[in-house]
Length: 291
Image (cartoon, rainbow, N blue to C red; front, side):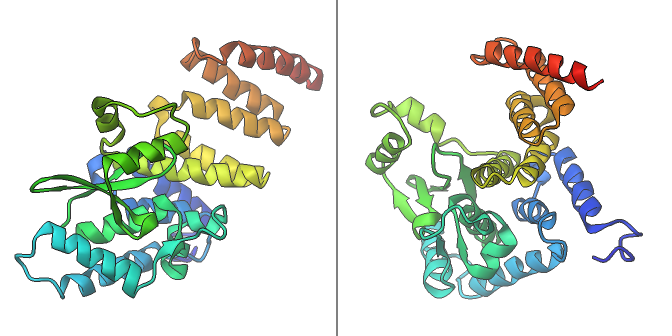
């Protein structure tokens, strides 16, 4: 949408406006695809969200047209896997995992390369459009997808071509993510609980923030942090701390001081609270010299 079409509002301002709208929505009304595309819109000024949503609809309609109305969910999953990974060629970008393009849904749809969470969003969005009840799972270290079948729940990995994972594979992944040993059934069930739509979008933003922090691209990391705070204002204590650290990298000392102070108010008993208080004291003295 041009500035003229949006009443003189710049694309960057429109992206911020739409993100605030999504943040205010009830979780059940949030579209993962739309939210992910508005995350991308700030980085891609020419991006037209509706065009990419239409592409997802077209992909799903093509697959849905091949399925019998009474086809079982398990068969739909097999058809979805074949369509996305064999026919369309979606795959995990194992060669350049930290390429920022892997975190932007428009790029993933165009290049058909992504990371677990963006491939998961494509998988969920197309699956839901053909009648599969898919849900994201914020599993440690690796985003997954789950689906209820007649004989139980299946856990799927879109980054690995939609393969289903048993308990042994999940335990192995937990160990790879830093777990000291196997976890019991109750803890595993908790780790496999369905993530809300906003939780999925928040994880996308945290991944993106991490990618840009690795590159020392602090302005883009700051943008992700700001959208995280807008998305989860009532549970953003740690994000204020992280944004304060980004402001510090950018030498925005007053802004850093403000965020560290907010973090201490919201999380006074945090394990790192004393270290942050030390930073606040040092920053306060530094800011006083700037006056």
